[in-house]
Image (cartoon, rainbow, N blue to C red; front, side):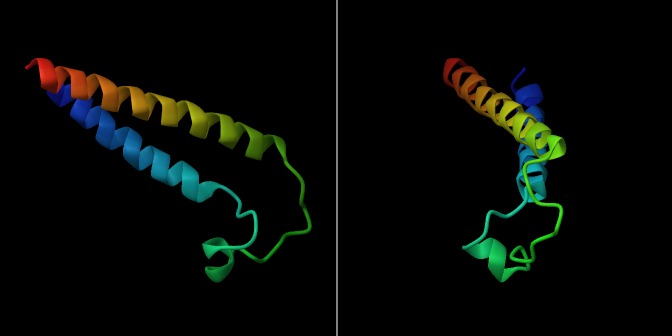
Length: 77
C-alpha cells in the first residue's frame, strides 16, 4: 500500500509541476526574466485559464492528501 502512494505522489508531483508551469505569468519576478513579460493581445482571464486554475487546485489537494496518507502509513508501519 505504501508503494502505491509513493508512485501516486511521484505522478501527482510531476503533474503539479507541469500545471504550474503552464500558468500565464502575472508580471514581475522571475516570469519576466525568462520571457514571461511579453504580453499577448488576447489578455483577460479566459475560460481555459480558469479551468487550469481549478485543475491545479484539485491536483494540489490530491498531492497534499497523498503526502498525509503516506506519512500516516509510514508512521503506523
